[in-house]
Image (cartoon, rainbow, N blue to C red):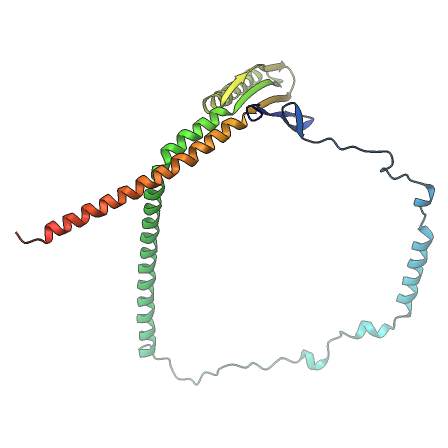
Length: 275
Protein backbone atom coordinates (compact mmCIF):
# COMPACT_ATOMS: atom_id res chain seq x y z
CA UNK A 1 0.00 0.00 0.00
CA UNK A 2 2.85 2.41 0.78
CA UNK A 3 4.46 1.76 -2.60
CA UNK A 4 1.13 2.49 -4.30
CA UNK A 5 1.24 6.12 -3.14
CA UNK A 6 2.60 8.49 -5.79
CA UNK A 7 5.89 10.28 -5.43
CA UNK A 8 5.46 13.86 -6.62
CA UNK A 9 8.05 16.27 -8.01
CA UNK A 10 7.03 19.93 -8.10
CA UNK A 11 8.96 22.09 -10.55
CA UNK A 12 8.80 25.90 -10.55
CA UNK A 13 10.65 27.98 -13.15
CA UNK A 14 10.42 31.75 -13.53
CA UNK A 15 12.54 34.89 -13.32
CA UNK A 16 13.14 34.30 -9.62
CA UNK A 17 14.88 31.01 -10.43
CA UNK A 18 14.23 27.28 -10.57
CA UNK A 19 13.07 25.29 -7.56
CA UNK A 20 12.43 21.55 -7.23
CA UNK A 21 10.52 19.79 -4.45
CA UNK A 22 10.19 16.04 -3.92
CA UNK A 23 7.31 14.80 -1.78
CA UNK A 24 6.12 11.33 -0.79
CA UNK A 25 3.05 10.63 1.36
CA UNK A 26 2.85 14.29 2.31
CA UNK A 27 6.46 14.49 3.54
CA UNK A 28 8.98 16.76 1.83
CA UNK A 29 12.07 14.69 1.07
CA UNK A 30 13.91 17.38 -0.89
CA UNK A 31 14.95 20.05 -0.05
CA UNK A 32 15.26 19.48 3.67
CA UNK A 33 14.93 22.43 6.01
CA UNK A 34 18.01 23.28 8.06
CA UNK A 35 17.50 24.23 11.67
CA UNK A 36 19.52 27.24 12.80
CA UNK A 37 19.84 27.95 16.52
CA UNK A 38 20.90 31.22 18.10
CA UNK A 39 23.78 29.52 19.91
CA UNK A 40 25.38 28.27 16.65
CA UNK A 41 25.58 31.75 15.12
CA UNK A 42 28.86 33.40 16.17
CA UNK A 43 28.57 36.85 17.68
CA UNK A 44 30.88 39.58 16.43
CA UNK A 45 32.63 41.87 18.90
CA UNK A 46 34.80 44.96 18.60
CA UNK A 47 37.97 42.90 19.16
CA UNK A 48 37.41 41.02 15.87
CA UNK A 49 37.96 44.21 13.88
CA UNK A 50 41.63 45.25 14.07
CA UNK A 51 43.21 48.14 12.26
CA UNK A 52 46.42 46.86 10.69
CA UNK A 53 47.32 50.04 8.83
CA UNK A 54 50.39 50.77 10.97
CA UNK A 55 51.79 47.28 10.41
CA UNK A 56 51.42 47.67 6.63
CA UNK A 57 53.30 51.01 6.70
CA UNK A 58 56.15 49.50 8.74
CA UNK A 59 56.49 46.57 6.32
CA UNK A 60 56.65 48.93 3.32
CA UNK A 61 59.40 51.04 4.97
CA UNK A 62 61.49 47.91 5.70
CA UNK A 63 61.17 46.76 2.07
CA UNK A 64 62.39 50.18 0.81
CA UNK A 65 65.42 50.11 3.14
CA UNK A 66 66.42 46.64 1.92
CA UNK A 67 66.14 47.74 -1.73
CA UNK A 68 68.43 50.79 -1.07
CA UNK A 69 71.11 48.65 0.63
CA UNK A 70 71.50 46.28 -2.35
CA UNK A 71 74.72 46.98 -4.38
CA UNK A 72 74.45 48.45 -7.79
CA UNK A 73 76.72 45.73 -9.19
CA UNK A 74 73.73 43.40 -9.53
CA UNK A 75 72.52 45.39 -12.51
CA UNK A 76 75.74 44.59 -14.37
CA UNK A 77 75.66 40.85 -13.82
CA UNK A 78 73.94 40.07 -17.09
CA UNK A 79 75.93 42.37 -19.39
CA UNK A 80 77.14 40.43 -22.39
CA UNK A 81 80.89 39.88 -22.64
CA UNK A 82 83.05 40.01 -25.73
CA UNK A 83 83.42 36.26 -25.74
CA UNK A 84 79.67 35.79 -25.76
CA UNK A 85 79.31 38.11 -28.76
CA UNK A 86 81.72 36.03 -30.86
CA UNK A 87 79.93 33.84 -33.39
CA UNK A 88 79.75 30.18 -32.51
CA UNK A 89 81.47 27.63 -34.68
CA UNK A 90 79.13 25.70 -36.93
CA UNK A 91 79.44 21.97 -36.67
CA UNK A 92 78.03 19.89 -39.47
CA UNK A 93 78.82 17.75 -42.41
CA UNK A 94 80.96 19.36 -45.11
CA UNK A 95 80.24 18.90 -48.79
CA UNK A 96 83.13 17.26 -50.60
CA UNK A 97 82.12 18.68 -53.93
CA UNK A 98 81.08 15.37 -55.41
CA UNK A 99 77.71 15.32 -57.18
CA UNK A 100 74.97 13.20 -55.73
CA UNK A 101 74.06 10.07 -57.63
CA UNK A 102 70.36 9.85 -58.46
CA UNK A 103 70.60 6.17 -59.33
CA UNK A 104 71.47 5.14 -55.80
CA UNK A 105 70.33 1.52 -55.16
CA UNK A 106 69.79 2.30 -51.49
CA UNK A 107 67.23 5.00 -52.36
CA UNK A 108 65.41 2.64 -54.72
CA UNK A 109 65.17 0.01 -52.01
CA UNK A 110 63.80 2.61 -49.63
CA UNK A 111 61.14 3.59 -52.17
CA UNK A 112 60.11 -0.04 -52.61
CA UNK A 113 59.89 -0.45 -48.85
CA UNK A 114 57.69 2.67 -48.61
CA UNK A 115 55.34 1.30 -51.29
CA UNK A 116 55.08 -2.04 -49.49
CA UNK A 117 54.42 -0.33 -46.15
CA UNK A 118 51.66 1.78 -47.75
CA UNK A 119 50.04 -1.34 -49.19
CA UNK A 120 50.19 -3.13 -45.84
CA UNK A 121 48.74 -0.07 -44.09
CA UNK A 122 45.83 0.10 -46.53
CA UNK A 123 45.18 -3.65 -46.15
CA UNK A 124 45.25 -3.28 -42.37
CA UNK A 125 42.76 -0.42 -42.55
CA UNK A 126 40.41 -2.43 -44.76
CA UNK A 127 40.74 -5.42 -42.48
CA UNK A 128 40.02 -3.25 -39.44
CA UNK A 129 36.87 -1.81 -41.04
CA UNK A 130 35.63 -5.30 -41.97
CA UNK A 131 36.31 -6.54 -38.45
CA UNK A 132 34.37 -3.62 -36.99
CA UNK A 133 31.43 -4.29 -39.32
CA UNK A 134 31.43 -7.98 -38.38
CA UNK A 135 31.55 -7.15 -34.66
CA UNK A 136 28.61 -4.74 -35.07
CA UNK A 137 26.62 -7.41 -36.92
CA UNK A 138 27.34 -9.93 -34.17
CA UNK A 139 26.21 -7.45 -31.50
CA UNK A 140 23.05 -6.66 -33.47
CA UNK A 141 22.20 -10.36 -33.83
CA UNK A 142 22.83 -10.84 -30.10
CA UNK A 143 20.72 -7.93 -28.79
CA UNK A 144 18.04 -7.55 -31.50
CA UNK A 145 15.63 -10.08 -29.89
CA UNK A 146 15.51 -7.92 -26.75
CA UNK A 147 14.50 -4.74 -28.59
CA UNK A 148 10.71 -5.37 -29.01
CA UNK A 149 10.11 -6.27 -25.35
CA UNK A 150 12.36 -3.43 -24.18
CA UNK A 151 10.49 -0.94 -26.35
CA UNK A 152 7.08 -2.09 -25.04
CA UNK A 153 8.19 -1.89 -21.41
CA UNK A 154 9.83 1.49 -22.02
CA UNK A 155 6.56 2.85 -23.39
CA UNK A 156 4.73 1.50 -20.36
CA UNK A 157 7.29 3.14 -18.12
CA UNK A 158 6.85 6.49 -19.88
CA UNK A 159 3.05 6.26 -19.63
CA UNK A 160 3.40 5.57 -15.91
CA UNK A 161 4.95 9.03 -15.51
CA UNK A 162 2.11 11.57 -15.20
CA UNK A 163 2.70 15.23 -16.02
CA UNK A 164 0.34 17.89 -14.69
CA UNK A 165 0.80 21.38 -16.13
CA UNK A 166 -0.61 23.44 -13.26
CA UNK A 167 0.21 26.91 -14.60
CA UNK A 168 2.28 27.93 -17.62
CA UNK A 169 2.16 31.54 -18.77
CA UNK A 170 4.14 33.57 -21.30
CA UNK A 171 3.90 37.30 -21.99
CA UNK A 172 5.49 38.85 -25.05
CA UNK A 173 5.34 42.21 -26.72
CA UNK A 174 6.82 44.25 -29.58
CA UNK A 175 6.66 47.90 -30.52
CA UNK A 176 5.49 47.02 -34.03
CA UNK A 177 2.04 45.47 -33.99
CA UNK A 178 2.78 43.16 -36.94
CA UNK A 179 5.94 41.76 -35.28
CA UNK A 180 4.06 41.29 -32.00
CA UNK A 181 1.31 39.30 -33.75
CA UNK A 182 3.81 37.10 -35.64
CA UNK A 183 5.84 36.48 -32.49
CA UNK A 184 2.67 35.64 -30.57
CA UNK A 185 1.70 33.03 -33.18
CA UNK A 186 5.18 31.47 -33.13
CA UNK A 187 5.21 31.15 -29.33
CA UNK A 188 1.71 29.70 -29.21
CA UNK A 189 2.58 27.12 -31.88
CA UNK A 190 5.78 26.13 -30.04
CA UNK A 191 3.94 25.71 -26.71
CA UNK A 192 1.19 23.57 -28.24
CA UNK A 193 3.77 21.39 -30.04
CA UNK A 194 5.71 20.79 -26.81
CA UNK A 195 2.54 19.84 -24.93
CA UNK A 196 1.54 17.51 -27.78
CA UNK A 197 4.92 15.74 -27.65
CA UNK A 198 4.63 15.33 -23.88
CA UNK A 199 1.11 13.92 -24.24
CA UNK A 200 2.29 11.37 -26.84
CA UNK A 201 5.21 10.11 -24.73
CA UNK A 202 3.88 10.57 -21.18
CA UNK A 203 0.47 10.89 -19.51
CA UNK A 204 -0.12 14.63 -19.62
CA UNK A 205 -2.85 16.81 -18.11
CA UNK A 206 -3.12 20.55 -18.75
CA UNK A 207 -4.85 22.67 -16.11
CA UNK A 208 -3.80 26.19 -17.10
CA UNK A 209 -1.70 27.43 -20.01
CA UNK A 210 -1.85 30.85 -21.61
CA UNK A 211 0.10 33.10 -23.95
CA UNK A 212 -0.50 36.85 -23.69
CA UNK A 213 0.63 39.72 -25.88
CA UNK A 214 1.51 43.30 -24.98
CA UNK A 215 1.26 45.95 -27.64
CA UNK A 216 3.59 48.91 -28.23
CA UNK A 217 6.39 47.67 -25.94
CA UNK A 218 9.32 45.25 -26.10
CA UNK A 219 8.62 42.73 -23.39
CA UNK A 220 9.01 39.01 -22.70
CA UNK A 221 8.39 37.12 -19.48
CA UNK A 222 7.08 33.75 -18.38
CA UNK A 223 6.86 31.06 -15.75
CA UNK A 224 5.87 27.44 -15.26
CA UNK A 225 4.56 25.28 -12.42
CA UNK A 226 4.63 21.59 -13.32
CA UNK A 227 3.94 18.52 -11.17
CA UNK A 228 5.27 15.05 -12.06
CA UNK A 229 3.81 11.97 -10.37
CA UNK A 230 4.87 8.33 -10.50
CA UNK A 231 3.97 5.29 -8.40
CA UNK A 232 6.89 3.20 -7.08
CA UNK A 233 4.75 0.08 -7.38
CA UNK A 234 4.46 0.63 -11.15
CA UNK A 235 8.22 0.99 -11.53
CA UNK A 236 8.83 -2.20 -9.53
CA UNK A 237 6.28 -4.09 -11.65
CA UNK A 238 7.99 -3.04 -14.88
CA UNK A 239 11.41 -4.05 -13.52
CA UNK A 240 10.02 -7.46 -12.54
CA UNK A 241 8.57 -7.92 -16.04
CA UNK A 242 12.01 -7.20 -17.50
CA UNK A 243 13.64 -9.67 -15.10
CA UNK A 244 11.13 -12.40 -16.05
CA UNK A 245 11.05 -11.93 -19.84
CA UNK A 246 14.76 -11.52 -20.54
CA UNK A 247 15.76 -15.04 -19.31
CA UNK A 248 13.09 -16.61 -21.53
CA UNK A 249 14.43 -14.67 -24.53
CA UNK A 250 17.98 -15.78 -23.69
CA UNK A 251 16.97 -19.46 -23.44
CA UNK A 252 14.99 -19.24 -26.68
CA UNK A 253 18.02 -17.84 -28.52
CA UNK A 254 20.23 -20.64 -27.22
CA UNK A 255 17.74 -23.31 -28.38
CA UNK A 256 17.46 -21.62 -31.78
CA UNK A 257 21.25 -21.69 -32.24
CA UNK A 258 21.38 -25.37 -31.32
CA UNK A 259 18.69 -26.20 -33.86
CA UNK A 260 20.58 -24.30 -36.56
CA UNK A 261 23.79 -26.17 -35.74
CA UNK A 262 22.02 -29.53 -35.91
CA UNK A 263 20.45 -28.62 -39.24
CA UNK A 264 23.86 -27.67 -40.65
CA UNK A 265 25.39 -30.96 -39.48
CA UNK A 266 22.57 -32.97 -41.07
CA UNK A 267 22.96 -31.08 -44.36
CA UNK A 268 26.74 -31.65 -44.38
CA UNK A 269 26.30 -35.37 -43.69
CA UNK A 270 23.71 -35.70 -46.43
CA UNK A 271 25.98 -33.96 -48.94
CA UNK A 272 29.01 -36.10 -47.90
CA UNK A 273 27.18 -39.44 -48.46
CA UNK A 274 27.82 -41.03 -51.91
CA UNK A 275 24.91 -41.13 -54.33
